[in-house]
Image (cartoon, rainbow, N blue to C red; front, side, top):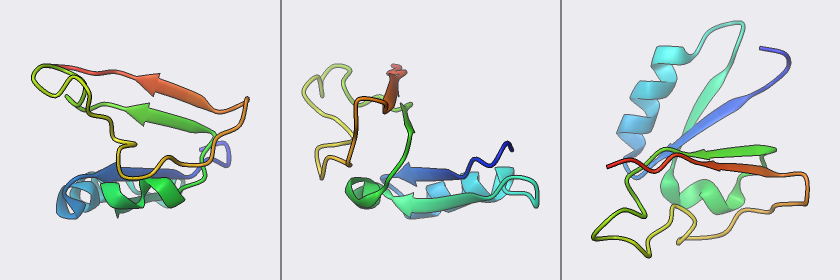
Length: 82
């Protein structure tokens, strides 16, 4: 795991927990939070893999609730799919 910790955020906390449980292991801890908690996360890398941003929600973002703290070294990867 190279010392990384992973947190999965989802609009549905139950879905986040299910996915986190699938990948959680002694070698790599995976936690789950609701999407409303994204603003309080501190991460070096954010991956957005939702349909938010696609038609008809072209102005939606997972950061609509609260923008997390970011620096010039923070990486945001947006893999919007439809």
